[in-house]
Amino acid sequence: MTGSDESVRPVGEVRRVGEGALLVELPGTAEVAALYGWLREQREAGVLGEVEELVPAARTVLLDGVADVDAVARLLRTARPATAETARGPLLEVPTVYDGADLAEVAALWGVSAEAAVRIHTEPEYTVAFCGFAPGFGYLTGLPARYDVPRRATPRSSVPAGSVALAGPYTGVYPRSSPGGWQLIGRTALPLWDTDREPPALLAPGVRVRFTARRA
Image: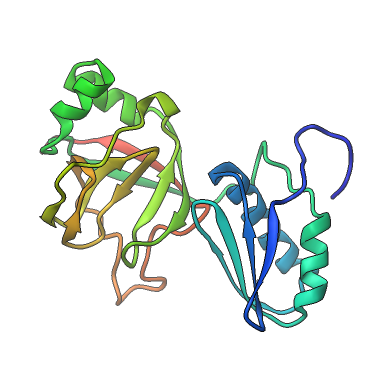
């Protein structure tokens, strides 16, 4: 995993967390995705030894339950994961009715009609960069940076389950009703979190997502 190719670069800062964990700090989600994919490959190949869990976030990857912390830390400091392409996860289609309360506002921020905003949102293939906030909630990347939108100034006290929403560079789907400050653009009937299913969450880091427009 070394070489002079411009598509590879050293990982960020590697910090020890407690006795059996390491935290890698990275510049952004692209680097997180690359390192997370690389680490999964290394774990499957047995290179990392025992590592119980890999947890990506916006700018970090946590390795928890590491049997040989020093050895894995040395490996991380010399790693050169490719950033151009990461392991492709399974593809999930999310049928969406685009009638969200904030769709018109988002369209205005983008300088387009509501119909054009729907086309913009359904065009990319998204990737779950990391999960958090609530069980089954994935932070999806894929929209170009020019379509970043701010969170609402005043969060809603209750957002319905299945709401498709935007905040900053991310798209998310609320897996169950909860408070939230994201911009609501649509809704899906797809159950993203089900404790009677294995695994309960449809969205996990690396999963690819396509939003498809449906009529109400």
